[in-house]
Image (cartoon, rainbow, N blue to C red; front, side, top):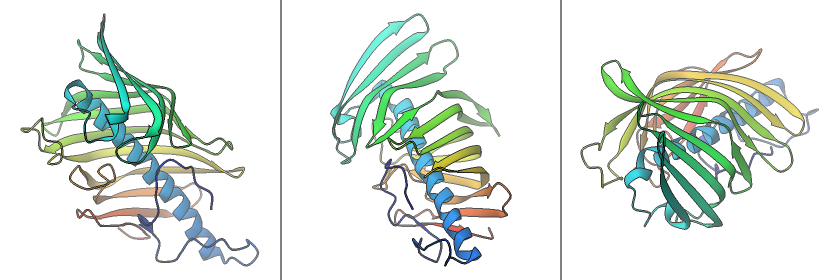
Length: 264
């Protein structure tokens, strides 16, 4: 199974059976379905983790201290523009503090009138994967909670060999804990209250379509070493023409593994 080299996903998602590289002629229908579920589940986690990293950047760049996090290898330039503030983050193509190589540029626009935050990648890569699309974070209120709504109409992660994850996302996140300590990041906990996803995944010439939506709210804990991976809650997904499956993120512990299940 070939995956985009976006983030290290080894050991963070399981099916109960390994993802075997069997010949299609010897693979049972159940094994083929499990392999396909593992592929789309891993694609989902890869995208979700990278999206959470972008949200971290959007929330924290205005006041961030770059020491001790992955932005330490970036050059950050700020300028006032008619809309508000424009921030350019240029990565050096070297390993950052999280041992991940990033290159290219992220352009963030903080719109003063609306509070919207726009992120536009320019030749931006995480490891060997190119990140493209338009990412818009919109402040608002949901269920009497202050939220940040993410809208991605045209996201894409593309590998040099032509494999890709293309997606559209609408997601509502709530700053659940840590808001009163803005200079301390590790006590921050974010909760995704509602989310919907559409995916088109291409691997070795084969295209898979997948839809997903939040089944229960799930949380991001910055105190965990891998701070951008969900730690609890559930997502419901469906490969087109297939039955529903669930990604169970865990019970909120940093060492919990995501798991794919036929039942919630």
